Length: 252
Image (cartoon, rainbow, N blue to C red; front, top):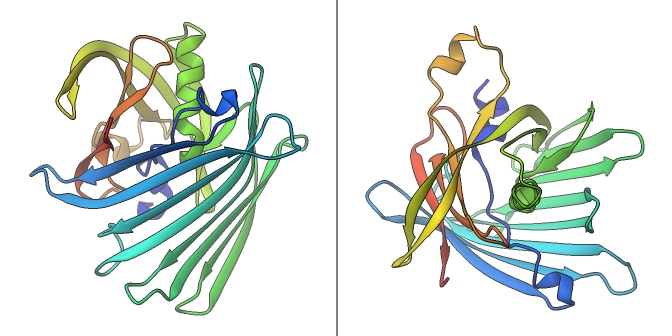
C-alpha cells in the first residue's frame, strides 16, 4: 500500500507551458523543504519544443538531495515527451533514472503511453538488486503523471472548472484522483504575496477504506490570474510514512 499510494503524494512541480508555446525553452527550479524550512532537495526543469514535431515537447528534470526512501544524497534525471495544444494534453513517454551519491544508476523507471488504445506500459528496474518488473495498465478518460500535472491543473482552471478527476500515474501503478478548488487564499512564496486557488488532491480509494482516514491532506496552490501559475505544494513527500513537506519555486 505504501508504494501504491506514492502516486498521490509525489507531485513534481513542472514548469508551465505558456513561454514554450512561443517557441522558447522554459527553465524553472523548485525545492522541497521540511516543516523546519530545511531544504531536502532541489530540481531544475527544462521544457523545449521538439524540432519538426508540431505541439510536441521534451521535458527534462534534474534533481539532487535527500529524497525520501533513499540513503544519503542521491540524484535523478527524468526525460519526458508529450503533446500539448489548446485541445489536448497527451503524455507519450517518460524515463527516469535515480543515481547513488557516487553517480551509479540504482533505479530506472519507464512509462510508454498508447492514448489511442487507452493503455500505458510501465517498467521498473532495480539496478542495485538486478530485478525488473513490468505492468500494463488500462484506463478511461485522462491520464497524467507528476511531470505534467501542473499543466493539467492550469488547463482546468483556465476552463473555469472547480473539480476534475484524472488518472495519476507513478512508477508502475496509478489511482484516480479528484482535483478540487476548495478556497481562495493569500499565499506568500519567496517574499511575494499573491491570491491563489487552493486545490485539494483527493485519491479515490473508497469512502469506507480505513487507510483514507489517516491520509494527510495534500494541497496545491495556483495563482488566481492567468496563466494560473503553480505556487506551492504541501503534503506528504511520497508514501504514507514519509514526512510532510512543502515544494515551492526557486527564484520566482
